[in-house]
Image 1 (cartoon, rainbow, N blue to C red):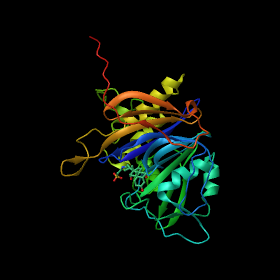
Image 2 (image 1 turned 60 degrees about the horizontal axis):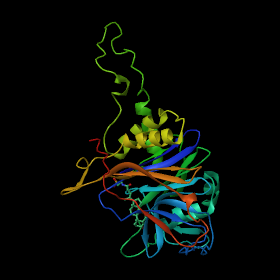
Image 3 (image 1 turned 135 degrees about the vertical axis):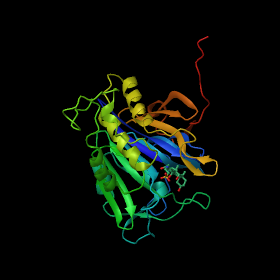
Length: 325
Ligand SMILES: C[C@H](CCC(=O)NCCS(=O)(=O)O)[C@H]1CC[C@H]2[C@@H]3[C@H](O)C[C@@H]4C[C@H](O)CC[C@]4(C)[C@H]3C[C@H](O)[C@]12C
């Protein structure tokens, strides 16, 4: 399972939990403006916007899981097993493979509105990057620094783009079903509830937080969608970069998966491999990983963004405990 969010404060922060059982050797990768993208069915691009994100690099090609560009646009790919479907290359359409969609959008567009227009005649094609890396069935959340986000889904109905009023996305089912499901939890609240159950009886409100009693806590995508929506909608606005990054990561932590809780095979469990938070104004990626709770950061603007070579940093590190004695 995975969860992505856009947290809006005085600046805008986009990121996700990547929950899975297989690590692909992801790194933090900056693609500078003059790295040449050799797109499969689109003209190759010698120059484009620079981007930073979490990516697998294979054959010197950045296969992004989630990333932002220097203009403040962000895209994340999340599993969409079930409804997700890609189609053969179609003449007359803008054919984009699923593995290059993030790089293509971030190379060319600045806002969610640009993306909507740019994908009006698009087809997500069913081409794989290689035999070893077959096409992953994904849907995508796209966000920008105006504080808006959309969801892109390719299913048997073709390509659909949805406005995302809650700025949250998880996995299957299709996005409109997640939105409808929220109504079932409309009375979940940070406030202690009023006793409408038996108004003449004085109930013993035995605990704080009773307004959240019906908030789902499961690892499944529908539960995470509701819980992350609640946590994000009530997250305070930070007064500094550190407060904003902290708030953003706490929303993601509200739906993180610890090892052992979500079995996907014999002795195999999905867990939150990393959580990231990317400042759309500043081009800084912050992250924690399952084995390293310390927040680390990479600032794209501290690198030569006019270069032609990918710049990579390790993502997965060991736990760094600060012993006090
Ligand atoms: C497994 C990841 C999604 C995590 C997720 O949504 N989990 C929920 C699972 S489920 O609903 O509960 O089944 C996805 C997100 C981005 C994907 C990667 C990116 O798309 C980049 C490349 C794309 C290549 O086609 C395949 C390898 C790959 C490196 C992908 C591997 C894998 O499918 C990733 C890492």
